[in-house]
Image (cartoon, one colour):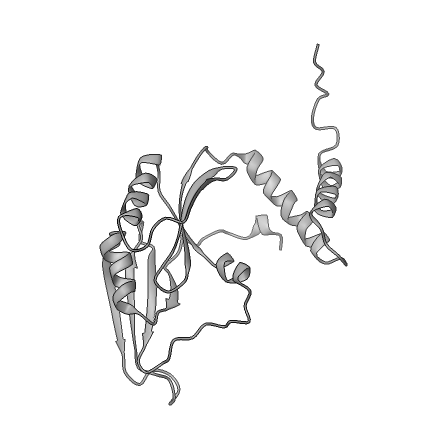
Amino acid sequence: MSTSERAHVVRGVDHAAFPTFDPRATITFYRDVLGFPVVHATCALGWGPGDHPDFIHFFFDIGKGDRLAFFYYFGVEPYRDTAIPDLIHRARHLAIHVDSEEHLLEYRRRLDASDWQCELQVRHETVESIYVTDPNGYLMEITRPLRAITVEDDIDANVSVDALMDVAGENDPTLEKFFARKAKLIAERHAGEAELVTFA
């Protein structure tokens, strides 16, 4: 069955969940600085296997029915796998979107007035984003669109991931090999579709 034949029936993120070792700072950051309401908490005693610690699982509303959740495990010492390079650790981030520059700048104002200041503001190809590290060391992005995503973007994305799958499976994958493979796929898939454009 091809991807196009599979019905796309999911409706967004129910919640993304992370551990926290500092619930006070986490609640202060997300509820009091960013303004995300606390909407649910599960208090669990004797959950799971016999050695599973008791925990509180609490949720913030991040809009449109999506939630961000944290686990606080009683008696578990703070831990981070130092074998994971910082580049890889920070690649695992949460991005939340807003609709306008005004909204993006409002969140930057809130962060810059807090103990967790904005670390970076940058324009990517289609979005503008601000970045901050939350009290748990997780990188968080708030982003707004710079333009609408078009069908051409969808086509480009699918060619890109197909080229990436091919190149990443080879020895010594590089960005140059990716671009070469992508160009070949474009030529194969869209030969004869575009008219030759000449300039006077």
